[in-house]
Amino acid sequence: DFLSGDCPMMGGSRGRVLLCGVSLCMLAGVSRCLQIGTQPLDWPSIGFEFRPTRTFLHYKFRNGVWDDGQEVDGKEPYIPVHIGATALHYGQSLFEGLKAHACRDGDVKLFRPKDNARRMREGADRILMEAPDEDVFVDACRRVVRANLDFVPPYGSGGALYVRPLLFGSGARVGLRPADAYDFIVLATPVGEYYSGGLKAVAARVVEDFDRAAPQGVGSVKLAGDYAPDL
Picture 1 (cartoon, helix red, strand yellow):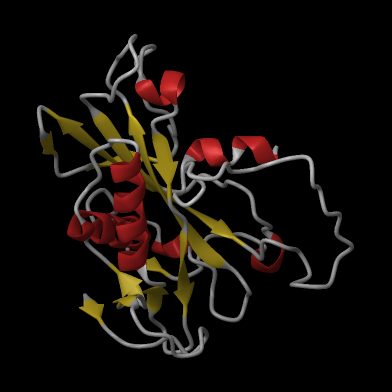
Picture 2: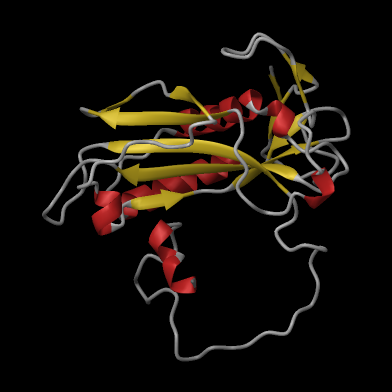
């Protein structure tokens, strides 16, 4: 199912993981063939918002071992979380973001997922979390794209399937220390351009009395908490 190569749409950068994506049959839980971009969506106008899809993946780290992950029905996009989870109390949570593009040759290509896997590992090491191995991370991204192939915006629409891997501490702690259990979620949602109308020059304001990240802090890793100050 997997090839290697460059996406004509993306300009020939290295490091892609390619899905043979014209159609996909016999997927667990899906009785019909899936084809790129066959969901009834107005692709040029979808914007950059969360939209439910068929499936997301849920992996659990328990007793020192990651499980094989489960495909979860996207119609119920909820997971149970312990009220004492370190993600809620102490910010043990980080995420990645990457895109799967439909290309001119009929394939779907993920952009550099191994780089995202390495960055997640670096972030997890910084705050003493247990990250999935690179192979597990990349395979999870492939799985979620395959399971939602019909949600991949068609070539030429300007959109992509946005893949969001999320790692968080799910073990309960009252004292300040790392969790003993972690959950790894990989969701996918079709998106358009982040900035509607494409990249254009904008008026900017320089703020000098506000810091998003402190020197020697965690601004170099993609912690969920890094984004709260921006709000």
